[in-house]
Length: 307
Image 1 (cartoon, rainbow, N blue to C red):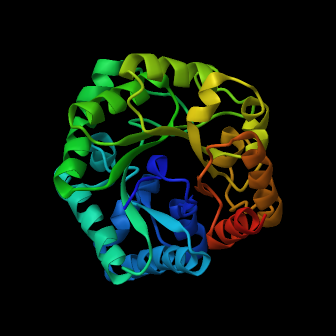
Image 2: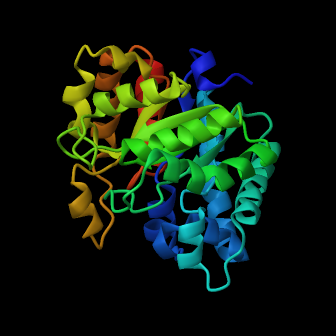
């Protein structure tokens, strides 16, 4: 099956896996580590139900589904924090790929691709790890290799908050000849948490990797935070092919301090995606991040398919 950059078809992703499991299904995820949900039958059942809803939606709407592995926190530093007796990065990521491939097999009548997800080494909202391109390449290489051996269709670096880490991951994928997507997160001013403008981060990644990423995304931010950036005429705009938006308009700091889930307004969010598409001719990957669930994605798809 073709990947998103090879097709004009609409692809959907899931919503906010971790927030949905924690707030809507009462699944405990230490440090937002979704891979831990596979450790017992009850939480694994909740995760199966979660993903099945998106397979069903993709089939109903006749769109393709990007099936993410629950591995945003499945790198070595996070595994050590989560598990008292740490399993290997290779084992955990292989188990997660196997899990989503089983779901894909059960839903063989739905067009889907398997996407190996890599998260930041530090906090997703705050660039709290002082890293270099070389450090990033070295740190993330084990997880990249696990995805290569597990034969995922593509890899996505999600919630990248500094350009050095993003470049390191992209170069690691390039060494392994694996298709990779870079997805940056931005603050309410449309800049990365480091203060670097989004388009400057994409330009720097393009130069350092010789345009290796198959496309770029924005995730873990509300459309109101980056709409002004998208409405620019910057040449890198054409390279942004996907949006995975937060449900809430709140800043990252406000979300970090929230004790309740903010689902925002699903209908308004769907309308925001329609406005984004007007400024983004190559947008064909849509989905959600923190606070979103299958209702949000359903409304977004219906808005884009029927418009």
